[in-house]
Image (cartoon, rainbow, N blue to C red; front, side):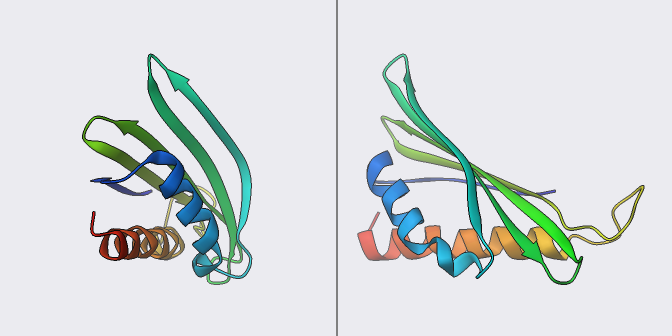
Length: 116
């Protein structure tokens, strides 16, 4: 499993819109399988699960993203899993790492463009 966490400035709605607008940069076979939005004790959140086909592993790999808006900005938590070629243990993490790196690139571009 590959993971990434950071905090960025801006609003949750702005970041979700930016991610959705740029999700095709994460691959031509990407799909947003499910998303949940809500508020808990005045804290806004968004959870999205993406999948895409991993050519190297000849299977699907998933990316789970959680965004939490709080006083410091928006906390970004992402984990990628799947894509391994083995039946009982992982022999590679390439597909996971690549999927996560594509997502991180979107977040980094958002930060640079928004100056956040």
